Length: 270
Image (tube, rainbow, N blue to C red; front, side):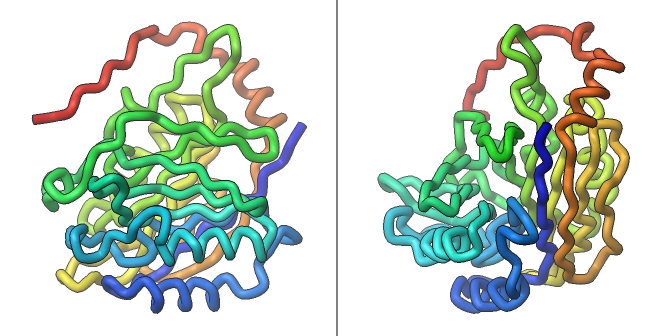
């Protein structure tokens, strides 16, 4: 059975400065490559911070320097790298999580739940589809920040084909005053979905004076922390997860067999 090595990158971000953030991250990553990891996870809007200036800061998807940088990092390092970017495509703006593979392939997930308390729902378009990607025999469900608060959107329903995903991945700019819900929800999503959860958040303070505590975590299927770093500092930490351990627990504790079935419908909030 397979193993997946995951690198969590918790860092401060330069406000609305893609070139500065890409340079900073490249230096932080150093010589990290496929000898050390399979997947590098960056925070939400790693190139700009959580900006609502979508009309000024969003990059055209097909010409985005930030997306091109991700692709180049994946190719050069020989591993997948992921993080979200403000992009514009077909006249619409998205907070888009990019999954860049070393072979040059790209997949993406557009953030579904837009943080209305910051006006994100007025500045970005809403994603409408869940996205599951595969790596080293693991299936990973992609999500962004505020998505974490909505368990129905993230809930999996095992069927004849097995579990929908094995890892829930969430990149974030989650503010320090709400750090307790962040930590609690990461653990809750792991327990209820019988999966690993990876949550990568930023640290520092943005241009609006909002502080971020980090608290990036890798949580196992029992809600127990595999990675749980001290708050308020940058770090780069690689840990591995085991598919065999996950399968053994799902068989030994098959709570999924008693779960409620439902049909997920999705309507744009008004």
